[in-house]
Length: 408
Ligand SMILES: NC(=O)c1ccc[n+]([C@@H]2O[C@H](COP(=O)([O-])OP(=O)(O)OC[C@H]3O[C@@H](n4cnc5c(N)ncnc54)[C@H](OP(=O)(O)O)[C@@H]3O)[C@@H](O)[C@H]2O)c1
Image 1 (cartoon, protein in one colour):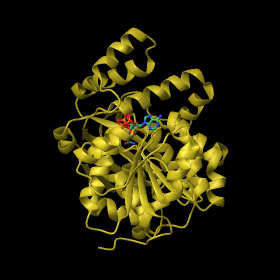
Image 2: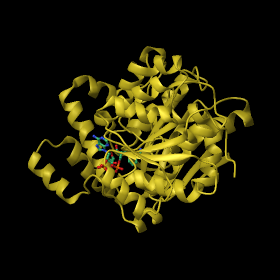
Image 3: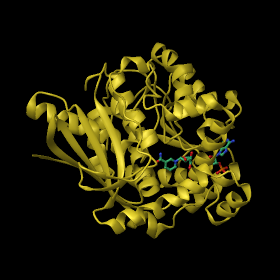
């Protein structure tokens, strides 16, 4: 079956970090879903023995594979010169990701990843946005649970509301109604790395705390929304809500999308996210317990307590078991305002958000980037700006995401 527009290089796509926990899931998904198509893909990692093991355990017979080193640009250039798109799951990205982006831009190769490391994305924007535009390359971060459901939830909601009323929404509040899933060692390592780097460097803390940290000029905006830092009663959902840890990246990506589209949604467009705890006083009380682990890891300097906590958590390469990946899910609700509440959008996903669902979102993003008719804009982009309706269709058709709108 022919599935897209073939371009000039040997491969359509190379998955980098194929031997990691998420990398394996991405390879497994692509192999099963696209084996009867003309997709020409390969995988790569730093360790030949692990790749051989992966090929035999997943029965990836016939898929070409390569070895490279994230600290050696020459070895990365060999990879990037062979392919139209690189899909990277090698993190923490702030530690291992920069040279690969540089190699992609030099080789005119599109790139996507699942980083949620805001400070690193900011570094990539500052260093490479202009070069990527000049070389006609798309660098697309955050193609996983952070931040596709948020970025595409807003993209979908804004397009529907514009079609219906002729105007974009002035405010959207996203509420996480429920979610179930696990966490991998690689994600914990990346999260701890952000905390460590921001302790050493005050500028990183500033970027993380800035609601418009990924949009170049804060003064351009009329209004800002700080992330929610405590538990409050929410007049929108009529429930107790509290901080949603992913809001720190998702809201920045949504605001950057608006910025990259010349403020299509308005300079004073407001977007916020929160986690719903429930209606009763008990749910508020239980909400505090749900926040304790995050508080302990991020605020506490006690290294003994930290190492004790870490000893219970998965190590790099480990993550949720098959059942937890399959039985996981998430349900997001977007409250759409134009002066008053106009519509409610739901974005629901099947599969553990960070892995079962993320691996499908990332795989579809990378194939979309390699083969589909997508917007012409280049640079360091957000998923919705880079991939638009082409990815929205793939998410619904292949990645078990459901988008629905109810006008009020
Ligand atoms: N946005 C989201 O929703 C989302 C969801 C899941 C994960 N993530 C992020 O994705 C990243 C990967 O997570 P994971 O759980 O899959 O991690 P993991 O299992 O530890 O895998 C990391 C991968 O990076 C490779 N690697 C590590 N250091 C390297 C180096 N110096 N050079 C080359 N390769 C290197 C590892 O190679 P080896 O196999 O040889 O060790 C492995 O393939 C993390 O940053 C995590 O935060 C984001």
